[in-house]
Length: 189
Image (tube, rainbow, N blue to C red; front, side, top):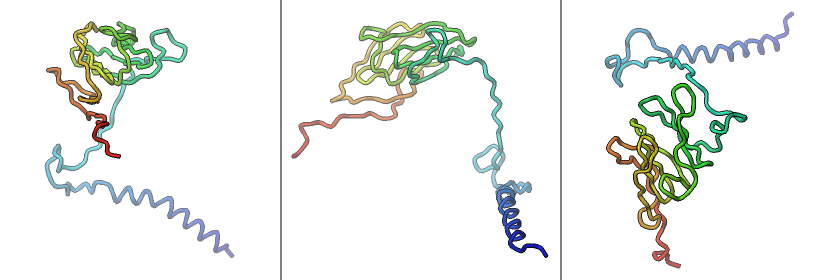
């Protein structure tokens, strides 16, 4: 005589194993072109796209050369020439790495003078390789060679702090938001 308890447990396990398969079939494409809309439009059927990636080079190491040991990477961007621009906010500089993984140049460095950085939040690299370096109180503009062009100073009390991650080709910034400090004179106690 079979043990009824073991049979019931075995059936429950088989049902639990078949549940994900049943859900997958229920969510799948019926294959009858029942989706409305034309293929390639938002109303058309979903299409599965498999990304194919290829490692070109690896940058950074714990025990690497001086230039490829990073402290705090804040932003990375590619330019039209496939150079990788890495902002290391711990050292306040941008490393430019060529398509072959070698160091092309270092831009900036810690300081307060033209072309030097301090308290940088992000560095935006345009397609031509020019830079918009965003800080808490200033925006530095650099040419594609990394040379200083000009500095825009912001007063946190009047203009606030602009947060941006993209620059348009004409130099305008796409701001995520502008953080403004509350005016202390308007507080009522």
